[in-house]
Image (cartoon, rainbow, N blue to C red; front, side):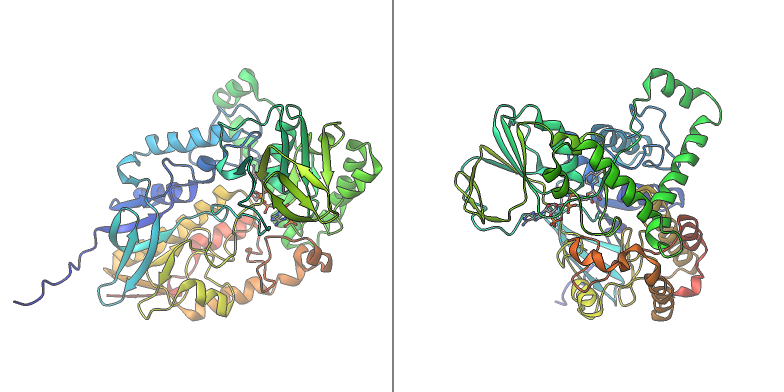
Amino acid sequence: MPDTPLPVVPHHEIVIVGAGFSGLGTAIALARAGFDDVLLVDDAAGPGGTWHWNTYPGVAVDIPSFSYQFSFAQRSTWSRSYAPGRELRAYAEQIVDEYGLAPRLRFGTRVHSASFDGAAARWTITTSTGEITARWLIHAGGPLSQPKLPDIDGIDSFKGETMHTSRWDHDVTTAGKRVGIIGTGATAVQVIPEIAAGTEQLTVFQRTPIWCLPKPDFPLGSVGRAGLAAIPGVRQAARLASQAFVEATFPVLAHFHKWIPGTDVLEVAARNYIRAQVSDPVTRDKLTPTYALGCKRPSFHNSYLATFNRANVALETTSIEAITPTGIRTTDGTEHLLDVLILATGFKVTDRDALPTYRLTAADGTDLAEHWEAGRFHSYQGVATAGFPNFFTVFGPYGYNGSSFFTLVENSAAHIVRVLDEARRRDATTAEVTSTAQESYMESILARRPLQVFSNPSCAGANSYYFTQQGDVPFRASTTLEAAWQSRRFPLTAYAFAG
Ligand code: NAP
């Protein structure tokens, strides 16, 4: 009896890994283009990605809500100009309902590996809930999804309650307790002011201070919301103003710093802000970064700095020696006794097991993470990588220019749909970006490197997750308009279609 041949037709035409806004936005773009056989898998129990997982006190957006939403699904219902996290989580759920995505979602499914079979033009994806095959694979995992625990001795020895901010345990109370928090990134900046007043004592363990700027956060109120909903043009005007604000404060200042040194001006404003907010001069100095604003993602909060004026809040800048059963010992021998330890220590962003979060291999066995590690991050518009046919990333290297994440998703989705449309038109079963197109894109992006704020030598002391171990900052050095145009108008000759 001959062996039964393996089925050549994949289970699904397209599998998307991740049901955060990247996955949802891409699925919607695909559906609009007539691609209906799409499965989204996610290890969470619901949609929303980062907004599903991050429920810590104070969680909110720090890009204005008028921008931090899909252009095609704008809301007039945000409670504030910077909406709280629960509203983003609800927004993801509404998007699923409005666009009929529920039947395409498979939650509680963690991808372990994906390997491409060149002859069958098909991905085999092993997951915690079984094997799936697909013609096309889209990685829509966000860069801030894998919690990073600090590599500190004794981390497992603490006898009190420990939690990473992205896995907040709402059964744990911080009220009336001695609480320690490690980290002063954007997450800690939101948590600290929110919990400080209720704690008996809050000790903030800071390794590198963060530049913190105020944000124009205000309630929209019922009148504001009604205006947004009912008055023609108001929502569009609010979005336009918001997009311009975001563009002017991130992509332009970061990528064209040499021409427009606006971060230097912001740095002066941020120093003045620290002076105005923090009363103790020693604490003020400790909270003032020594690296240029822009090397590391700045934070935006209206009460973070002032929280350090509280009598029950201490800023500890002596290095941590160990986590002990009773708290934290710093290198000066001080034992900080704690009941609750909060790890606001961020995420694996450019680590080898972070992008993607599973082993992905091309038909010749090349492992994508190894490939990127050996040859440094590279891609074509952050979406495709030569040598990896039928595979796309929504948030790949050199794809994101730093404006609203939703803009990135819409750009990447447009790019992917364009390639798949062309493959369908040609009846092709494979599409792969050419090395020539990729090299020319990378050259054009890297040529702008000297203009970027990241080339400032003081960035070396920033401990910024923007930088890879090799010292690269894999952002797309471009304006948003340029990125949007390129994503929709790239030459189709950039891809080789076959099959
Ligand atoms: P993060 O920016 O990576 O900050 C992690 C913090 O933990 C840093 O202060 C880091 O110190 C510290 N840390 C890590 N390991 C440590 C160790 N072994 N010992 C001492 N300190 C240690 O992470 P995050 O605050 O979670 O923010 C990540 C990103 O999420 C943000 O940049 C932002 O893009 C996003 N975010 C967005 C929002 C929003 O939009 N609402 C809110 C929160 C977060 P070093 O700086 O010295 O490494």
